[in-house]
Length: 521
Image (cartoon, rainbow, N blue to C red; front, side, top):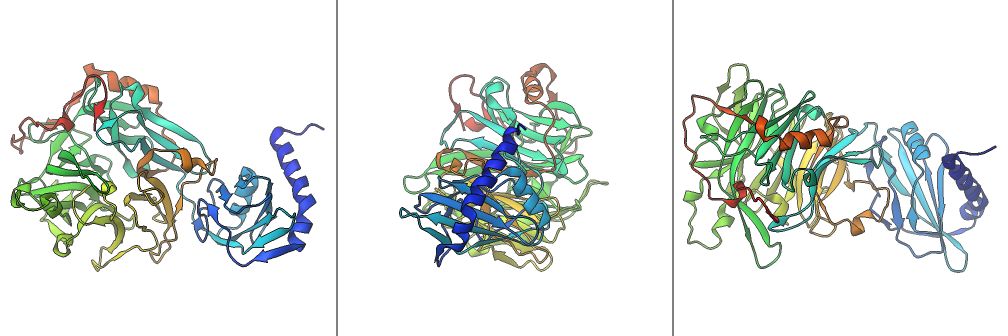
């Protein structure tokens, strides 16, 4: 009888396991500590539908024997002469699925140079009852400074190791592609922005199988940037920012601040840009819009206009501190209420960015740092949680590190979050996941699993804007690229006649296309 390659591998694994199982289990010297493994998949809550969490045993040995066991079902054993532990896919899936809500025990055995076996204290991880959403979308970009090179938007199947591109900028003239967003986790309704290059500056909108290239700039606003879909799927809130990048000579030398920013709304149905004076005033800068799940409030970050800061003072950019605000909105009547403060962080010397409301509306997860609105460049940026009813907030100590924690998003059921962290090297942001229980408690975060457990040692790109989606993006990258190049069918957004003209031509190179050569960020 011929075995299929995969079946043959499992049979060989079973034979090897049986031949060493008894002496390893019954004749070993215990080591009274946990083993050191990379990545750190210890004391975590893992999804029952997760891809295998392969790891490296960072303990010197001549052989390795790792047993995965739980309350129900057969144990899974991996024997290896290498410290790289790669877990068979199907047995892993079966073990986790049978033991939802129970504990996964990982026991690591090592053989020393004298052929004696040793056992470490078992690693105990909880298997959640809640599946994680199956897909994650993100941008991959090198941690560059002034110029960009290759980049793309990607989607990763979290139940496996499959990663596929949504769009690659090498197919769109090497331009910048960024700020992707999905309506209600729907992979058939999403948008992203393109900037500079021969394809021009525009928003690409994929909506129920159709692709549109839209120029969102008007005489009222510059091209749109940070975005948030209204739950009704017809409205997208945007910020329109004039961005300035500069550099420090010590520490994290990149930095960004806005010269001006306002909030506007784009209506998908009638192709119209509108706003209201309370969220688009020259006396204040507004950015990072985020809707409440019922669509009745628009949360955003705001600070005083630049004219209030002393340009002669020491480090005037450090005076720029954003507060968390919200404004009532009725989508049916287009009625706006009055802006109300949620957290006045500037009063205690801090600055809020990236507010994300939980699906049940109970919490706002946000970043806070010492100044500014570009937390990815702030080493002191941490994650905080605010209760929308009591307005009380806490620093999420278990999630934070001594490096940058930044962009984050909730899963559809509110039981998982993903966030960007530079905790490993201070340079490249990686996606980390945490489980959220019914009481709002977060579990120790873990990094996105990879087939090769040494992957992050040599992968020098940043995972930017990680967003959960409920399934794979089905529109092909080639179709998106063709639409991006189609300058004959660009849709010009209409301006709400109630709004007046006020935008002058920007001298900021951020908003000017670079036709050839490297591209400025």
